[in-house]
Length: 319
Image (tube, rainbow, N blue to C red; front, side, top):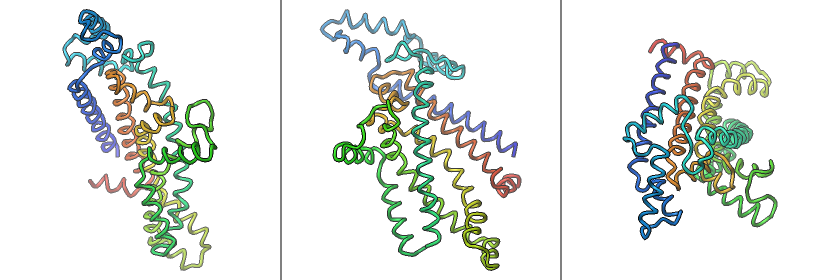
């Protein structure tokens, strides 16, 4: 188990390094940069070449953009490791780590609430569908789950805005000054994970119901509710728990459209602003943070699964 854990940690570090290098390379190859955009938006157009050159020169000297590209990459990676990535181009009064520190709790709260809502709905749906397997209720629930899994979260967000805001006038259209503002973003984000988790629960319950200890308990005439809760659900939720972590991490990385749509000051909105303004440090910082979050979550899930299910430890020791 220790060797497996160390192996996963080494792979995680290598993957993160490759993500950072690929992201940095693509951003360098992308047309346009923050200095050019600043020159244009400040009024220093091509008709005033001297002003344009002055703006660009001031930018490059301030942020060290004149040094070789490979040195810029090494400097940024050193800052990422020491959590000192320097100021943002678009928000010069804030450092990249300050922006991430302020925005991350917002994105995390929405993602966690969305997963909790998804679990609260998906577990009963999965259990009922498994107990009525191949029946009309199972087919109906799985049909609805398939629809939910097919609808993008931004489309669900737009639908909620049209119905709950434009039609019924029940909720505010966006913002982050009241708990009520969280209702629509959480629902929009929860639909996809709800469908995924419902399928996981259904498959896990069906597989557990076939186990010998469950069929023995049923044959002995044990109470159905006790068998379902004590034997079936307890063992069925082990594989489900292992996918919850990655779902939370992926939701935080995928809130870009939702946060922009509902004007939520989370990482997704800052990422969008950085992309449109070519804010290199903030783009690198948020991308690397999202990647690290996903990678670390997967490592934790892989390791914890061995403790939750002893059978996997035996298989890994044999491997």
